[in-house]
Length: 503
RNA sequence: GCCCCCGUCGUCUAGCGGCCCAGGACGCCGCCCUCUCACGGCGGUAGCGAGGGUUCGAAUCCCUUCGGGGGUACCA
Image 1: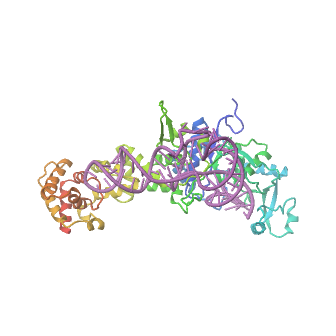
Image 2: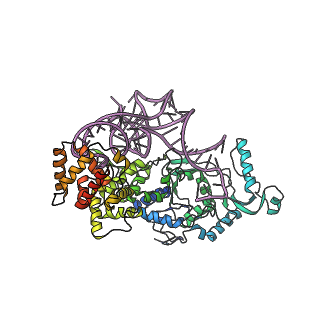
Image 3: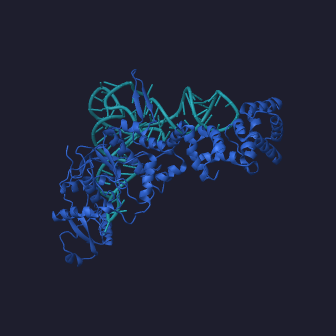
């Protein structure tokens, strides 16, 4: 095998995700990365990351690093990219300006592109007039075939020109899409390919870079369908073979509009980490959007469907024909369920390490505990692991265990629901607990049941509620007797007595 | 306005002419377990947008219509 001029082996599948560093990393980027990567892994291809920073107005300095962090967090590793290099460097479009220039010159020479000096104001007026006349909007070619001197005598002239495509009447608008089959895309107008600031627009840069980087399959969002004819034209003019296209469905807000950071906090990737979602849960969830669950048929012909899957399983069974063309609504309900499920699957130590940052963030303790404190946290962890949907809920459960009796807050709603006999229950409980020698869950429960359930003849629910409030400060808590064991005899008795005195 | 894409339970989906008076999952509701809340177990609710065709037979094919979305930038 011989290598081509982009340093890649012919025939090898190469895909990429190409985000714009314009702010917080977008969940849509992770979605695209996931499907690109799954496909690449499925066929033994390469997955590249390219930064498309041609928009200098919306550019954000820290965006690129955040993107790396979030994709790493999700475990979606690329094979080539700006940070790790590769045979097609550089992978940042702002560093490739010299690369695009000869392509632009070639297009102008071939009369496929031309200079345009129209001001934004003139273009806006033109479009408004076209719309008013119920005509399709598009550049009117005022500048085509003119020199700067000739054009300068006309209205709406600006000194620095842009370069536009000269789109012919017979431009190709049909193409085959891996997900949608034959697609009839709209006829493009004379799209700008080189901006006044010398940067290429997306359309030129994407075609040039995809070619130079040996991209074989362009997997991107549905929003690009209508620009695909522009890209097809550029490939044709430049004498390049066009890649295969796969236009993914768009993730939607609850109101069905394209998912946006403004309408949906979950459009920001960092939000998931802050909320305490596990990366494997998010990946699993994303893989379920626009794609069926794992469906297997056993020897008997019995069909079972499974929603839970790892990335490797997803990649293993990946198939374009199964990708849906309808845009799924990004509804967190199923993600919450997945997250709780994955939390329960964590082994104890991993779970503890996962909740510590959230406890520290919320000030439950100043830093990661060790020694006896960690052992205590471990005992608490055992009680709360099945109770969390989000890791960020952990501090609420953990805090009462690390708070001194004097500082324990009793929630208003917990206090309000108490019945009249609460004080008597507490007094009786204290008396029953004082003689308990070995402070274990079994002994604690035995002593309390004998005294309060049998002695006072109360129903468990009625009897245990005031005790729970005294010990935890809340009406809903981890298991009561286990909690008392963790707190220790002295602390437990102090809390019971102190709460009784406050009634 | 113009162009394009899409349309099965509330949500994610299976279905690719008979196996479907439509299956699974989440959610929701009920019951069980139970010291609260979870977990777990069991059961239930709910859908082929509408109208025409084609066919012995349509969720599946065709047309129309309605609905939703995207594009229409010197943003990606």
